[in-house]
Image (cartoon, rainbow, N blue to C red):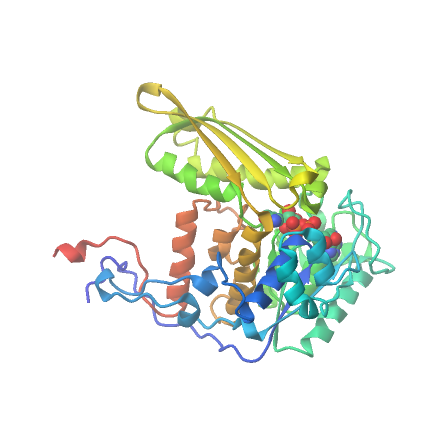
Length: 448
Ligand SMILES: NC(=O)c1ccc[n+]([C@@H]2O[C@H](COP(=O)([O-])OP(=O)(O)OC[C@H]3O[C@@H](n4cnc5c(N)ncnc54)[C@H](O)[C@@H]3O)[C@@H](O)[C@H]2O)c1
């Protein structure tokens, strides 16, 4: 068999992956717009009411072997993923609303769909949350845990996880909670020992999202971070993740504007077209938009959204094309639009001999409709990683950067933001763990 196109990088054979058995428990932190849209969507798909559009795990195919082999199995038939029918949801929120009430409040899904799903959605009631308004200024939580210090709160979350574990076979946790204030790693994040001391001392550097993450990883539970928060992006959490074979990934679901950015920017770069300005603005009226109206939460989001262009364009290597790029991002809270976000991008580019051109992108999207399948895929792939002997002990699952705005990487490694590199990386990782040949698209063997 000619393996040129498929890489010359034959993998050594399938690494061991435990089969899916029994129920997969999904613990969701923050039962707001994204979470309820994911949960309701999974139930709608299970009942045959709708299709899981936007989900690679449910609808995607993966090419195996040469182009002439014509072999494109469904991803979910190729790798052992939990079946949607085997997923059980639970979660935490700072409000007492059950998933039906919260979904009705979010107004993402229409009333008819929600009414059909109501008996199921009503059964999922949030557990009291770990919350502190210092970290999310615009929210006033009422359904919150009380504890003598952060260690006590972490222990309460650990107890929630242990109780849930008794009812299911495997557990994954995902943060779909609000964006916390901008934070950077400090001494308390240097090691697990320092972090644990910080829990005892109520260190200000430990935000609620980190307490959930610590609890999950202590229990060997994989953790995905759908928000731009620091959460698992610290030495302490990476150490804990590796120690307990609990895979992690973050940060921030890549849904609307950044999704488009990481498609368009690689195209300009590939053609060596220059970019002098990229102005991105958004209007958004859901609770996420309200939280992001606070400058401290906005800063966390801004940092997460800003990084992609810098890494894609590599201005230090292409100063003539990208050195003077002015990149600006704005998010404006505008209640009438609810979850139906509108994003505008004005892109000033230049071509041959420096002649300027403009591109305008106006994306009228639905934030949570785009985010829900991403949250689902992350949960299913983290569960796969946990069952894979090769992936479970490496900590950060960089192959999931496809889904993330500010992908977490090993120390000293710059993140890949180009959506198509990310897609190839994801699929090659699946081929690799299943012992299939990697695909590099060289293709010379067709012309032998
Ligand atoms: N919707 C998208 O397309 C998208 C894209 C990328 C990232 N995100 C991020 O995902 C997160 C969720 O977005 P959303 O639109 O569902 O927001 P949302 O405001 O509708 O939901 C967040 C929920 O988290 C709860 N919460 C806040 N702090 C909590 C805590 N400490 N413990 C438990 N629950 C807590 C809130 O009460 C709320 O119900 C946000 O951080 C957002 O920035 C969303």
